[in-house]
Image: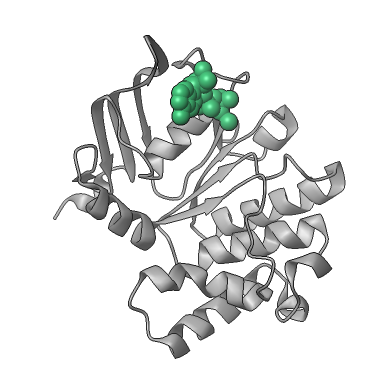
Length: 233
Ligand code: ADP
Ligand code: MG
């Protein structure tokens, strides 16, 4: 098969409208782009530009109004909800600005949550979760609850949760937005390490310094892709 040569992500004329009462908001308009395996892409643009909408579509949390989305050689834009959630559970790790950890569970238990949606045997799930916790440098905190962690540690735990299922794609929506500058830089260094290890990452950010760590940056404005720049060769 030639699948290896295909980009991990290929968007062709992708659009997303939201209907609100009598008005239609064109959140994304005719977006075409490709992302190759191992890339690290920053998505920038003013508030309301469509960044989160793009990430939602890429993450199979929603379907485009029109256009095509091929993920790893498979057209996903017209799949059923059930098929989309299966792809999401198997292929995609999400990281959000607010860490979305369950407060009454330990770090290790939180990191095992994505396995509830898969049929991984519990022992294997635990081993993969431990490995993910180690890979983000949180092994000393594995049995602590979220209330006992700093902001940077919370985001590391959320990254471990995204990584544990070994996704093909990591999607992050302003992952440093709630962190102080130094902690944000630490989280960014972790993303760079993961990318060096081969992870494909798409990251929304407002901050040009943060975007500078990515291999390239795309800019959205009013739902349109207005510019693409290569930061690193
Ligand atoms: P960004 O993340 O760049 O700030 P969003 O993708 O959140 O932008 O939003 C893009 C546009 O779509 C905005 O005008 C926003 O108000 C609108 N929008 C986003 N989500 C919804 C929704 N669920 N229903 C209606 N409008 C939405
Ligand atoms: Mg947003």
